[in-house]
Amino acid sequence: MLFESQPGLTHLADGSVIAAEEHAQFLSEGCLWVAESGSTIGGFLAATELAGNFHIREISVALGAQGQGLGRALIETALCAAQERGFAAATLTTFRNVPWNAPFYARLGFRALEQAELTPVLATILAEELAHGMPEGSRCAMFCPLG
Image (cartoon, rainbow, N blue to C red; front, side, top):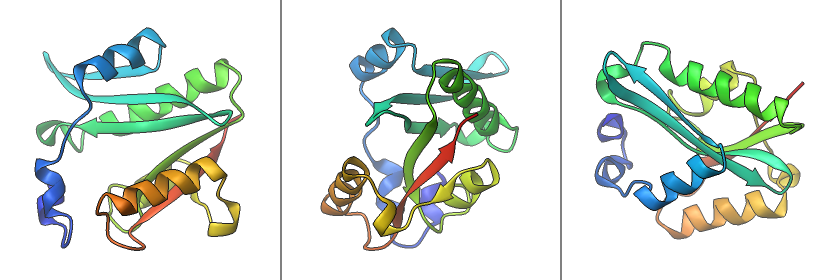
């Protein structure tokens, strides 16, 4: 996993993943997208409604499938579906300075929110991430208007 190469984040390489039951819930809500790489699953994106916005809970692309545009395709597909469902904006939380996180999302139209712009629910998510051991200041919430 690429997090092994990031100082202070190596523990994430062995971190927990979304349980099968959670994937089933995202699927039943129509909020799980899967990308194929050849004949295997190359990645997925799971999302939910959060405080009236389309919230990307997790996106993951297999190491061997990275660099093929799967992450971009997953995000573009999910944002298009979100817009069709009437969402005005999308949100997510991510690492501020990891190249394939915030900088990647910024290229796709997301912008990092300042502390004063955080909704209560996004502030709570960031506080929970900090409480679970994420380095201080390493995470940010991002926002993308749809439409």
